[in-house]
Image (tube, rainbow, N blue to C red):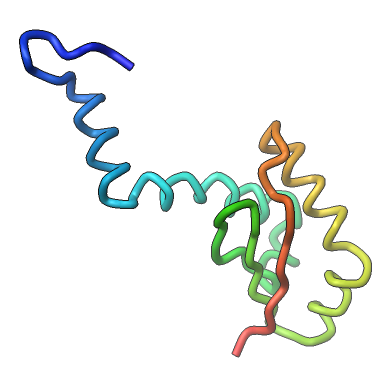
Length: 102
């Protein structure tokens, strides 16, 4: 973090403080995770199982059918979680929750 010079903060520091204070930093921080999910599962599955939120290591995925949800919960969901973390280059997602779209 840069030091303030003569009482004036750099634009980058001011923007960072604003994003942190407004909660937008967290929102922008989840975008790479949501995008990585879509890339990892591919366009076909991503149209049926859409990542909608990421908070505190938990990715929420909205699934449009009970059959897709069952497949993800029982068989492929954990593999996709690992694949997304590999794409991100860190163990960002600790848990994936699959919810049926209402």
